[in-house]
Amino acid sequence: MTNTNLSITQYAQIFNLSPHSIRNKVISGELPAEKHGNRWMIQVNETELPLNQELNQELNQELNPVLIYKLEQQVEDLKEQVEYLKKDIEGKDGQINEFLKQQNQYQQIIMSMNKNQTLLVESKRSWFQKLFGLDSESI
Image 1: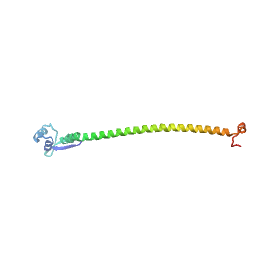
Image 2: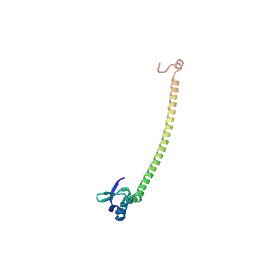
Image 3: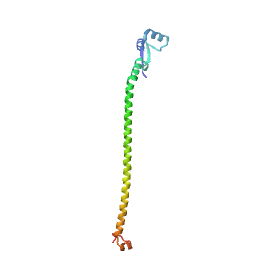
Image 4: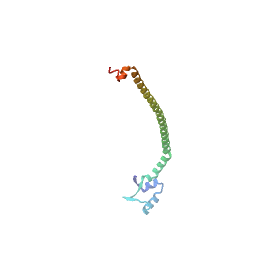
């Protein structure tokens, strides 16, 4: 919040009033001012100046719709990206589930192969080895 000092003439021009009416308001105390030398100076917050108010109104009327439109477009783009990512994740979930099913099938195949290998080795042992519990490797 920046304050600025304006002379009576400047204040009157900015607010589109007569210098005479401003001087009367200063003298009566209706408008606070300080005397600097032989001039009255009126301290005004820059945000209260009509020039800034007009600029603010122009910004509100002209720039805000443009900014709002751009923000709305960005929001729409983000929504599209979120939807794309959701679909991508769903696709990945399907792939992961398929991979887990395949992994389970491979494990079952490996277990079956191990069982078949054991049966094959067992079938190749002689009755003598079976009787005495000897492995084919220990002989």
